[in-house]
Amino acid sequence: MTLTLADVHAAKVRIASGIYYSPCPESIPLSEIAGCRVYCKLDYLQRTGSFKERGARNALLLLPEEKRRRGVVSASAGNHALGLAYHGKLLDVPVTVVMPRFAPLIKHTTCRRLGAKVILQGESFQQAFEHAQQLATQLQLTYIHGFDDPAIIAGQGTVGLEILEQVPDVEAVVVPIGGGGLVAGVALAVKSLAPDVQILGVEPKRAQGFVASLAAGQVEPVEVRPTVADGLAVSRIGSLAFETARSRVDEVVTVGEDELSLAMLRLVELEKSVVEGAGAAPLAALMSGKLPQTAGKRTVMILSGGNIDPLILTRIIEKALVADGRLCRFTAVVADRPGGLAKLTQIVADSGASIQEITHDRAFSGPDVGAANVLCTVETADRQHVERLYETLGQAGISVTPLKFPPPPPQLSRG
Image (cartoon, rainbow, N blue to C red; front, side, top):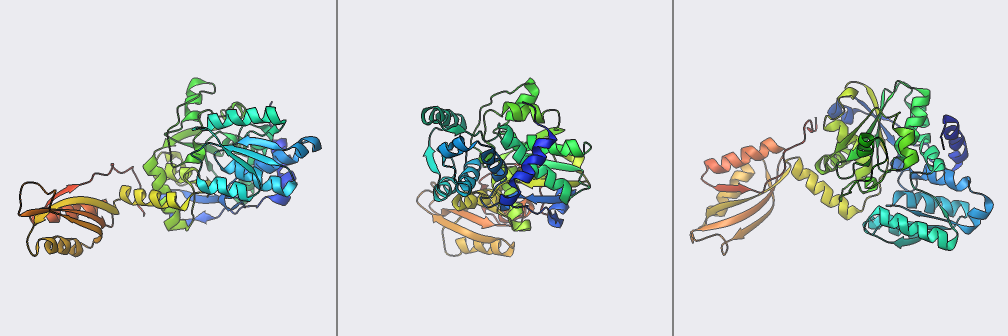
């Protein structure tokens, strides 16, 4: 099947009464750190926290009455399931969703609260997908694919139509890629109306399905490893999505886990926005300098989802602080006599750092009974501050062993 701009326009009219027309404001602080004029399409503000509602509502409204009465089933890592559950309830369509066991707790508990039947099955999206298809056959339910259904892709394409209305002089749109439904719909809409606008895709390095498929010239399954962008953790992109998007996407780049975590942190700090890893992928690509063609250009980032477990968010922020040089941990050897520990803490204080946690250990400090090990977790300003602290401690005769953090991705300063 070939999708057209008319399908996207029809979807926009069809879903308008039930979908939030999300804002697309310019962000001055993100523009400063990304090197381009950044506009944020805030689709994480949809009722269930992601763009997936668009395609879900469109697909449900297109069902014949008999199929709506019987109900639908789908596999989802979370956001598609939420969209189906919410709009199924609004449209009185029974919904069953199958989620892989790694799906965030907040997503499957919310689906249940919205009235969907939730089944946790499999250790990967593919396993959940296979189980959902079996249920569709056994129970005579309509299977609605989360990213490779023409109605779904057309619904997601309404994001692109809204972007062109809100930022008519846009020069680039940065889109996160998981199964490919969003990038396919947005690329179809934008390139049909404004062919000079660049469509730039972003995938996690741990789930490079679109990149691999572009290289192979056809849909290519890939191994998926755990990623903070769990909404993009798809081992096989959609065939229709790939065929729709491949000729319309100008470039696809990949981002690592530290880059994703740092992007989430920047969004919290600078935009006061809690965005999940998948939604933060466009900013991760811009901050890491992987999209140099956007320099100085009006660039829209699609912040596609905001559903993240608060406990996971806490861990991600802590890891981002470490990667940013704002949280460090080291062991130091101090004299085990009065004033030994005080000397260490005074140096840390004088450097402008703040001790978050400290453990004083004599029993496991080695053969020297006159020395003690101290494990310190310290809040710092940046990586340069950390290095100055270590240098000062060494000059004072205190041996320091840092617990290493990875080298910083390029161009990640806070501006």
